[in-house]
Image: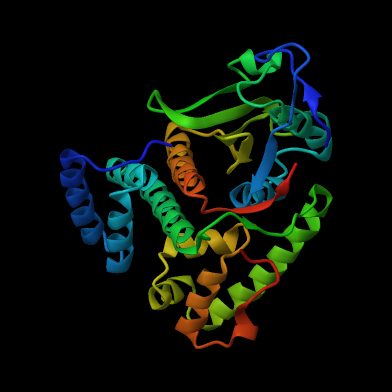
Length: 166
Length: 151
């Protein structure tokens, strides 16, 4: 992988994107994290640039915001060296999926009891498209995301942490 | 796993150790989503996907003829710019939905790392997936990734 460093033109472009993201109502923490990362990670820079260029498509913009947050979380949660986690056999995938869906249904109930996705997104600082994607997908939720929800809703660890997390 | 003899790219009869095929956590997470969406059947996995991916043991560049077919294997690109060290494995007309499945693969010294698999969609989706792959490759190059075993 060739190291990436933004060119002066890209820095100027980022400034425009940051301004537009701010006007679009994205949270300051998200914009700051994304723009800082975009200076050294080409993938994040590309996503921010895509966000700018699909302005007329709110659904696509939401997908990009969720992708950017995934990348921010990837960096935040990344181990300092390759981390070996337990192997999950292909034949176990169906039961893992069922376990994740069950845990997410429980999480959805908690969120609904606390005002719903948009309220919890705002309280936790998680972009709404990211929280929606997490709840609606079968991906393993990040432990760090669950903690952000727990902190926002003043929940105990036992109420929030699931078996299948990453 | 024993050693194997590779005739292409090495002197005849020289046994080279097989490359590791590492399942990153990004790959595992994508398999969970694809499984839930029934993108491929168990038969597709057992008869097509896994045997194809296991060919990566022979190393990159691969001596296997399939890797010369650009419909199956090629460098990862974004806007026609090649991502150095990044490749895509491709399947067409796969599963009940006859979809195009893509598996981004990062290549390191004597190992390949499977990243986030996805169903090929429109241009915007492809651009997003390649952007994410760039981030994954960046983290992999720094050794900052979680793995869920080897194939």
